[in-house]
Length: 406
Image 1 (spheres, rainbow, N blue to C red):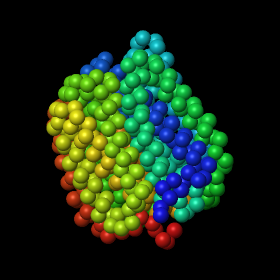
Image 2 (image 1 turned 180 degrees about the vertical axis):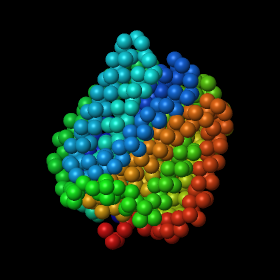
Image 3 (image 1 turned 120 degrees about the vertical axis):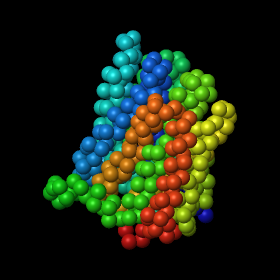
């Protein structure tokens, strides 16, 4: 029988898991509070798009630096330092809120620094997980890492909405404290083994992640599928619009909307860890991305709160399957000495799908309306799933998640 908690038998991994959860929780609180406060004071959906854009651009610009940093230096140390920078950014937004002059453009500047920290955090933290457990527990560890973000996606938005209801400074203070705790915890992890980069720093070394991803078509197809599906179909940036103007739910309702995908995702990860995907992984990947698009369309067209929440839960559940398959393929099909650089490339793809997708949604909604933007995006995600099934036959033929050659 499968041990669904196998990764937690290792103390270092348990500390890592808690640290990632706290970091994600704090980031969610900041996201909910900043998004609501900016939109509430300006009613400008385009600024919601800028929130995502300024956090994505650093990962794109610094991709060749962040990846090799994770491979050449201790991933634990890079991860911890990045968390402390995020803490400083939360403290800076707190100071702005306390000043009584919440200038959205100054806040966007702070979020840019936050994005720089995230650019270093993401490849280091993603690569560290598999250094903390033996190979036989890799898939279980990766699954729970993915679940940690989803768990935070449930608690973070709800907590963020409730804390913001008490006042913006309360939310930002809580986030800063969570970042502080997370950073201290990750630095308490004993130094793990890591196959570092031994060759000199050359252009080839810096671009090693791109080279590997391009050669490995299964990895390329999996992360590019997520890129375009979520870039076109993502609706998270527009949840403040739905909560305030369409469903009329208020800040606490925004927290429920933000939490709904996480609830669906955690339910799905519980199912996946109990009954692991053992066959037809590629086909399952394409089908669930298509269902993600369909559920997004339902949410976009809904004017009923309960239906919107159910649709978002299904969005999270179907997305969880594709995220799990992609992350397991990425970590288990990548050699350790280039894992940081490959994860940096993956971070750019994820950033493009999430933060750039939020920018796309915000700008498009500003011109065409939120409902059209979300429904059309869901339809586009279905089209992407169909197209990728033909463009990447290697994924369609992939049955097992493990690469026995590594």
